[in-house]
Image 1 (tube, one colour):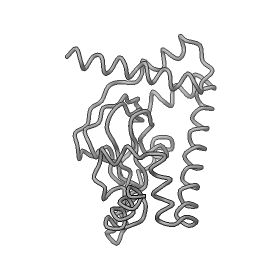
Image 2: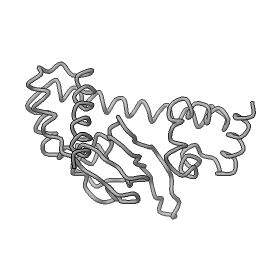
Image 3: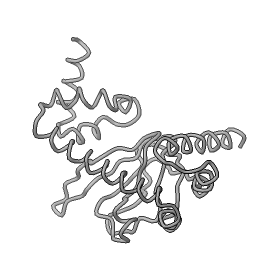
Image 4: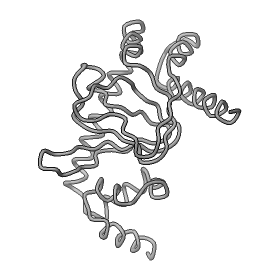
Length: 202
């Protein structure tokens, strides 16, 4: 129990520090906002949200890995993104516009996070204009990241995509099955294994 309390206390400190870097709020305002985020734990394989459901929470990941995926009408599965410690997670468009989610979000490992209810987040946007601006910047960063990913898939070879992934998120090779990383990089698990072996040899 004491260890769990320490995890959540450290998590709140991390959330506060992360937000303070990009928000011009007073200490009291920032503390009030951080207090709205509550501890949540998810089991490995547990779905956070499924296509067609409504997103009711936004998450700040403390430990573990989440995966965002799209299931096509033809039955094909596409890995779109990973969220891990220090990152935000959730289907933000569903939360923001109160629309059904168009993707799934699931846990690839046990996950600990701090989560805020949609109504509390939106009410905070109304209360503090600076926070609403932060929300807009978050959307811009997400859109930029998605655009960069599409460019990478078109512009770079499989080897180059792997090298860029290793620089950004190489630690994930130690945390999740490699088949998900292969899917994210648009290559077969066999190709991923071969390219990683070549990188190790060189």
